[in-house]
Image: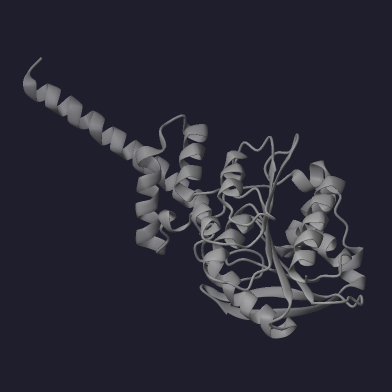
Length: 319
């Protein structure tokens, strides 16, 4: 075979390989920044219908009993929309407030099941839609990068409503858990964080996911995806590394993770628990639970974990 045919074949193979990597990187980036096709829709009503039909969630208390007040704030991509849920039960000591962050593809309807836990413990509750989801503005999502800035805006508003002395707890699921952990780098007035199935580092998570989905190495697919993300959205994967924020913080954190989570492996929470600086921090791996399913697999156990942690941290804060 002539040498130029060899050069052409090699060049063609390299071109095809690069094209394949580019296509896969585009799929990764699109699935991250734009919601992938799922059975969960973006409107509040569709999310509500889905949870009612498939998860048995009811809304009688939310609809008729809870005293709610809608709010709108200016976020990174436009208006953030959510609700304050006021708890009229008399409580002694500091005013208690829980701010809940939903996960990717969901909206604040998904936060209601968690809100019940806090409400029963005397907490006022703040739920809202991340940018791009529910009723909030936005053209894309960033798995915690811009979301932590929006959460910071929500927390400023929360402090304005409930006071600087309020006992404020953050709860997040999946992307929401990443967001609440990243918030540790922005604020020093948080009393506790509950992180349900967060990843510890964006690159680590995507490289694992890439191998699972494509059976190919995360390099260079994830790196190409990151370059595309930075250029189009200003979102750098390297800037979202919750484990670094955990290492720098002394806030007590309760890590909850499904032991059978194949989407974000439990090792992410295990690593962050080891990195936590506060002796009150906890790690709970829920048997037989997949991604974001701990609450459903062991409802009573989940409630006990959250309530025991809250009571422990609150008691420590008022001594």
